[in-house]
Length: 174
Image (cartoon, one colour):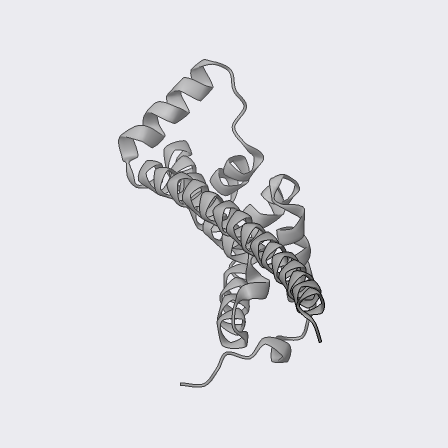
């Protein structure tokens, strides 16, 4: 084998190494994009949930929000109207519940968005929690009233979860 043949083999191996490096970099860029998207989604959801929960816990906010909306002629959301009618809570209390439920569901929808990345044990815990929540008439009423505004994939996931028998998502024993 002469030096020209060795050089040619070296060039071929160098080209292969460059293509492998480019492929690796493409995978890394894709992964970094996905992580950025996930992180941005988490920050947005977390911030919104915290704000909604702060509104839910601040009686003044609920009172001001209610008075302003009524004063401006904004109809009371159907969920709040049904809650007031069925339970006798005040409009302000219904507004606080609405904000609190918004905050909780936003966090759950973020989890559902990445449910495929959870371990089977974590997924079973999330499924069990969702099932438990939706056996509560309050959570179910909220879900039913707002489902058209929710992320479609999350609604499909929850609906299919609720259609399954409970035995398919057993919680791990302690």
